[in-house]
Image (tube, rainbow, N blue to C red; front, side, top):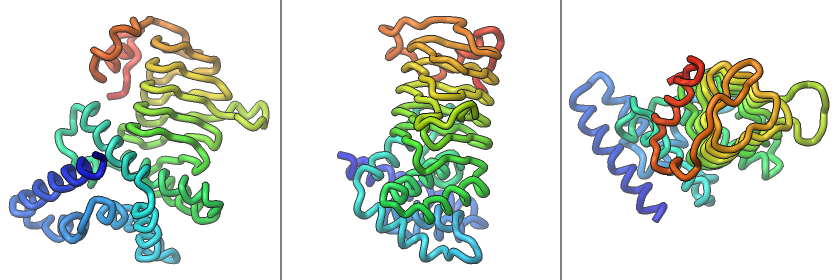
Length: 275
C-alpha cells in the first residue's frame, strides 16, 4: 500500500509541475531539474537534498548516489516520507498540495536529511552523518543530532531554529514549530539527557523543553514556554516555568482537528501556537 500511495503522490506532483511549467516559464528548468527528469519520488528527493547539502569539497553526485542507495534498500524510510508529507497536508492550513512541502518547505527537507543521517549513524558511518548534521544546520537552520530518535508523521513547521539533542525521542504525529529546543539542562551528563516527546504532542514556537523529562501524549506546549518537569498526557501547559492551564478529554481528542488543538494553546493565557 505504501508503494501505491507514494506513486499516486508522485503522479500528483508531476501533474502539478507540468501545469506550473506552462504557467511560469521562467521556472521550467527549475521544475525539470527537480521533478520532471526523475523517475520516482526518491530519486527526486535525493537530487533536491544532495543539491542543498553538497559543498565545494563534498560533491553533489556522490551524496546523491548514497541517498539513492539508502532509499532503494529501505522501505521504512519510504513510509516515513509518505507519512511526513501527509502530516503537513493534514495539519498546515497554508498547504493544499504535496508539491509545496516536497519542493519548498525546509522543515520537510531538514527532517528527511535527518532521517538519512540517522540511518548512516546506525551503520556506524559517524563522520558522514555528522557532516550531514552540520550541513543541515547551516542550510536549513535546523540542528538535529543523528542519534536522536524521531518517529513518522512529524511536522517541523517553519523549522528555523529547531534544536533536537542526541538522546531526545520524538514519537509519531508530533508537530514542532520554529525555535523549539529539545535540549539538556547542562547539570549532568547521564546517558539520557534530553526529553521524550510522546505521540501527538504539539510544541509551540520558541518553547524550550529541557532535561530527561517526558511530555505525555497529545499534550500541547504553549509558545515561549520553558518545560523543566514531566508533563502528563492530554493537557495544555504554558508559561515560564510551564504550568498546566487546561486539560483535555482524551475520549474527544480523535474528533478534533489539528487547528482545534493549536487554538487551545492560543486561547490559554494568551500564548500563541506560532501558526
